[in-house]
Amino acid sequence: MKICVLPGDGIGPEIMEQALRVLEAVRGDGFDFVVEKALIGGCAVDATGTPYPEATSKLAKEADAILLGAVGGPQWDSLPREQRPERGLLAIRKELNLFANLRPAILYPELANASTLKPEVVSGLDILIVRELTGDIYFGQPRGIREENAERVGFNTMVYSESEIRRIGKVAFEAARKRGKKLCSVDKMNVLECTQLWRDVMIELSADYPDVELSHMLVDNAAMQLVRAPKQFDVMVTGNMFGDILSDEASMLTGSIGMLPSASLDANNKGLYEPSHGSAPDIAGKGLANPLATILSAAMMLRYTFNLEAHATRIETAVKKVLAAGYRTGDIYEAGTRSVGTKEMGDAVIASL
Ligand code: IPM
Ligand code: MG
Image (cartoon, rainbow, N blue to C red):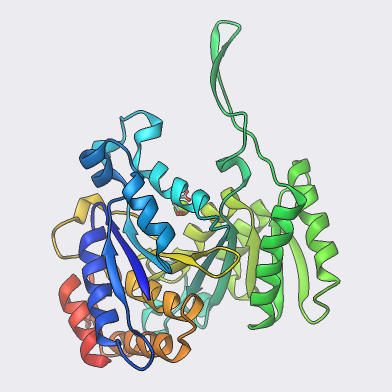
């Protein structure tokens, strides 16, 4: 199995190192792999002038799966838009047709106090956000900033075709079918035509999934419900921009965005796996970052792309044990637990494996 590894910027390389050590520790029993590393994001801009170089694109296309750390940092924020690290991420998602972004938000019981919400509101939380990743206002044309009546006007286009909505809808219904059989589709149909179509297509699709209970929620209400009573949700499905926002919100329910993995899949389950968090430039290079989201992303890769459920579960169980044993990086630390750095957290997971 060929894994293209893209450590990226900021804390990316440190957390990736731990994820690779964990993968090495579960090698065997049908899991054998080679790693090919490449540049993406700011480090790629520095080395080649572009955030998604041709060599990276080639390796990513040839690989069976891609494991990514994080991209971005303040030193690249003033570059022209085309050269910003985030563009690398958007480009690889688009080029590889990774339209289905799965972002699970699970609260490990040991971290109930790390959440800013009351423990009883979040304990037992297990939500899956299915975010469409290659359409919407992120990619819609026309876009830009133009001059009009002697002032600048900024514009973007929110656009979804029926087929784009249907294919992400299917992924979400299928996922709900394997979980609690409840799907909440999030839109803004009271204002935006594009999302009226979204709702209509979800309703049409629901005829094929009589065993899944479909509900709808406007995005503003969904944002509120996520902090009011998050356990009402099982699977949520939404467009690219609403999904971006709601998945960050959902991540905080679990105590730390440093815990959340993600998978971005194409129609054949080839995937890009990355932590949901960013490159955390403020703590980069200090050995403080939480590697668990990346380690859990590697577990998702084993499950979704390589069909190695037992290997995936082994890693997830090891992570649970490490939390139960009290190991905590700074982002999830509380009094009475054991404060560790990035590498020690990796060591603990490997020991527990
Ligand atoms: C994410 C990130 C990206 C996005 C950025 C870095 C382009 O926020 O993966 O959620 O908006 O999709
Ligand atoms: Mg985001």
